[in-house]
Length: 125
Image 1 (tube, one colour):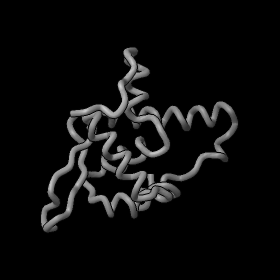
Image 2: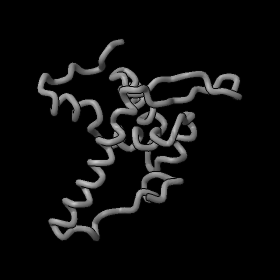
Image 3: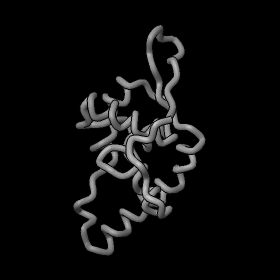
Image 4: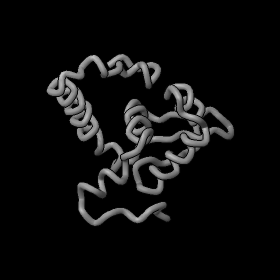
């Protein structure tokens, strides 16, 4: 496995290096729903281009967060799914979501928050 970019040595910086950026946390959050084909991810995540989606998926794969497998029922389809390491981010993402809402409330910026379905189609919470 070739890591795209060498990760920092401090654990907190390492963690942020793996899933920081505009789309990685969103992709991981969508994959928490279960395996997804590339086209389904592209349709569900509002505003992401296919090029960027594939770049981000490759980076997440190289960091051991997602894996690719042949899609059942599709001759040449590929599905992306979380690895056990990626799945271990579930409580972290839940905590980050809650902390983000708390932060907005503390700074009186709740009106600036957007609902999940503004970025991820098919998600209501």
